[in-house]
Amino acid sequence: MAKIMVTGGAGYIGSHVVKLLGECGHKLIVYDDLSNGNKWAVLYGDLIKGNVGDEELLNKVFKQFKPDIVMHFAAFIQVNESVKKPIKYYQNNTSNTLTLIKAMINNNINKFIFSSTAAVYGIPSKIPVTEDHPLKPINPYGQSKTFVEKILKDISYSSNFNYVSLRYFNVAGADPDCKIGQAYRESTHLITRALKTAKGEYEKLQIFGTDYPTKDGTCVRDYIHVVDLAEAHILAMDYLLNQNVSDVFNCGYGHGFTVREVVNTVKKVTQIDFLVEETDRREGDPPELVADSSKIKNVLKWKPKYDNLEFIIKTAWEWEKKYTTEIKPNS
Image (tube, rainbow, N blue to C red; front, side):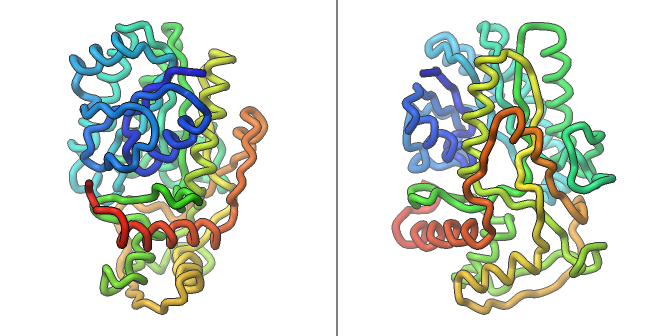
C-alpha cells in the first residue's frame, strides 16, 4: 500500500479519488484550504487545512508524513473567470504548484500526478485530439496548466523527478453510492447548472453560443464520469510507482455531445422541462473538444465503466437531490 498526499482532496474530483484510494487501503493525507472543498467530502485519510503556496507548512507535512507520491488537484478551474482574473489563476494554478514541486524535491519526494486539462490544446486542429497535439491554450486557465506541464517536463528531464499529467476533458456525474458529488460554491458546469435549473435554483439555463461550426450550432464536449476519471488516477499511480517514467494521457471517452444534446438529456432524466435561453458566446470557449483516448487505454489498460450520458446525468441528479436535502452546503 502506498502513502499518498492528495492536494485539493476535499474538492469534486479529488474527493472521488480519495474515496477510491481509501477503499483500496492506501494511507492518505488530504491537504486542502477548503476554499472550494468541503470537510464532509473527505471520506478517508487525515485532512490538513492548508494552501499549496504555503511552503513552510508543506515542508512540515512532507517531513512528518513522507508520502510516496503526491496527487495534485488544488486549482481554480473556471474558464470565464480566468479571462477576467488571470493573475488569480497564474498565482494559484502555476506559481503555487511550483512551490509544491519545490517542497517535494527539497524533501526527496519525486513522484507527482498532475491534474491537467484539455484546455491546454486551445482550438484543436484535429478532432479527436491526441496527446502530441501542440499546446495552444486560448484562455488563462489553459495557459496556467500549460505552464505547469512545461515546468514538469523540464524538471523531469533534469532530475529523477517523474510525473504523470492527466488531461481531463469534461468531468461530470457523481459517486454511484451517492456519498459525494459536485458541490461548488458557484456552479458553472453545464450538467450541474442544468440540474439546478431543473430543481428551480435558477430561473433559466443559458446556452452560450449557437453559431459554432457543429451539427446544431452549440459547443461539443467529451463528458467523462468522475469515477472513471478516478480509476485513471489509480492506474497512473501504479504506472508511476512501477515504471518510474514520466508521461501524459488524455482522459475522455473519445466522442462528444453538443450543449443542446446534454440539455435534452437532462430534461429526459429529470422529467422537468425548464426554461432555456440562447445567448452570445463566452470568451475562451473552443467549438469542439473530444479526446483521443487510445493511449491511456493501451498503456494504462484503462477500461471505463460509465460511458453513458444518461447514466452520468442520473448519478449527478441523484446527488443534487441528496445534497439539497441532506447535506449542509459549504460545511
